[in-house]
Image (spheres, rainbow, N blue to C red):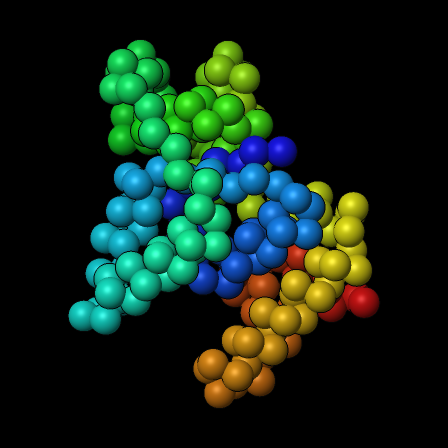
Length: 181
């Protein structure tokens, strides 16, 4: 399955690492565009002077890990699309160009199902996607979750629980599933 990742699900580190873990476990193909990655880098400026350089480093690592994920398209494709927020047309154009099955986004209102359906694309929220992976490969996804909790605890110096970390990362169903194992 090919999945186009919107900026809003790549920017938060724990969410992104969970989603990429699900892609590895399930053999899914992640997709994004230069513009999506640039939006991530610019959004990271809000974190202070080190935000954007750190984001650019993370983008470089992500791009190296998934070298075939980047998609491009002709300007005419984007120009013919209509979405409630004109600034999101590039996301749908990238999904179409990459033959994505789904757009992974938190911005449900910006990607109406009927419009996506006309283009042969669905949308899914990140927690729903991770739970799809959990339902098919719970042992492997458990390992992904435990690894991320360990990494977050080590890097932050705090003792994170799966429930707390993934709930904060806006993956509440995954948090609950992990805490019940």
